[in-house]
Length: 301
Image (tube, rainbow, N blue to C red; front, side, top):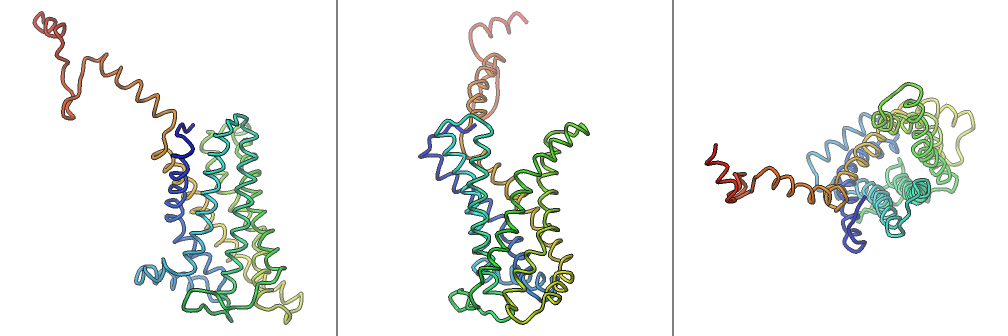
């Protein structure tokens, strides 16, 4: 539990969110850019990776990275600040805390992802172009595609916040799994597996945007069958950095830079332990204490 005041803690919460987002965004932006390109996935990934290595200024200043960073920065910042608000309100009920964080995070994440993917579609579809200022010039994304994006992300959030915890509880109770191992493994595998279910929504959203009035139902269904395996794998793969590395580093940054109860307990215990051991620290080197009693005991020995 964090103990810093809200005024001191809020900027640190935002900074931790930014740092975690900076670590996650390069890989996720490459995968997401590949998902909206109809060219081969491997080809698109190779091109994006080459740009990141050979021209990092263009990659990190490009539209794809900036959009992805905005999504995860916004999501992690909402997670951190919602917990800060709950601490300020002294909310101790675990179910109430969880419900509040899930609602805030889900609303922020789904909204940001729908916005980001609509911009991605305009920027990276076959007929789209990006201006010199990094603004997409493709046609406006239809409501149908945006609705499908939202349904896709709601499915992912449901798998993350409801299915994964229940699966972890089942593994602990029925198969005697370690609690931490169960929660981590289910937090990664359940949302990743959900992408097999939501991939058709993503494929149809992109296909409808690119070909609004020129395909029959059978042709659209054939597109889903053709792209389902690649899209499901790619979207499942992107769960690992987004939900694994991002969440982990965000929490670790917060533990490292925001004062919490464990630190205060440690600082109150360690000096007493050192004194009881008869040691003092001088210039970083531990040595025997030089009290008169200790000299007398030394002479006796």
